[in-house]
Length: 244
Image (tube, rainbow, N blue to C red; front, side, top):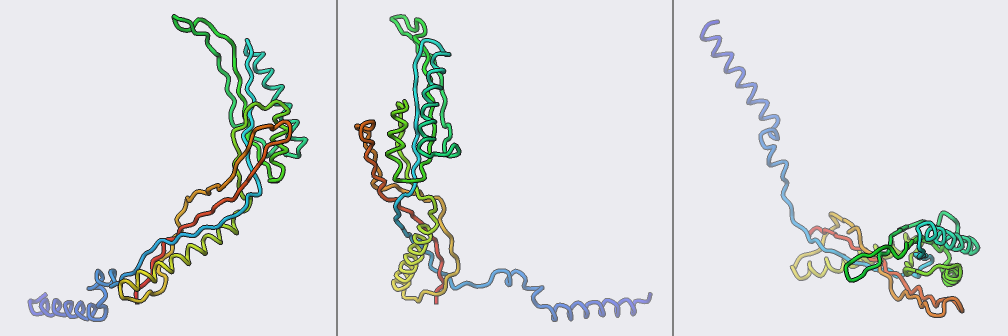
């Protein structure tokens, strides 16, 4: 190929490249297109709370026995626990609402001046978690299991079976609180609050019991005095607003 033809070919290719770049200017400014300018925003955290009366409860019921031998201790414990299970069944508590949460067996040592001198006996502890789905039945259930031989009760946890409505109420209050906070910050900054850009809900807020209590005195005679109080559902939302 002659020198003149080679020069013409190079010029031809350069011309095509220039035309392609002119027709597609975004290709030469890709970095700028990927980082659009922003007018900024205002980010706040709103908090809302709703209160509800518990409609169910959970109790930890246990029986602890002590005997000179392992077989005696376990047999006594099993017999008492069966009486407790029968009492729960009589109260209408279904088997699926009763779950073993702890079973332990240990030897109790006899200690003298020189340390352990032998085994005094064996102690067995058996605990079950019971869900009581009728809040008005709590006192009767506690009385029944105590009369059946339960010698340890580890408190009451109150809850709401379906908390969706309370959570929605708390969420709406949180959004309203965020709006107030956003408008306050916008006024202080001398700008106008724009539309919502981003919303995120803060997960993992605890459900706080308020006023729940249990009086154990005279349980067998008249039943314990139960006060379920109220539960507080707390929701937080993080909201980013635009600036106008």
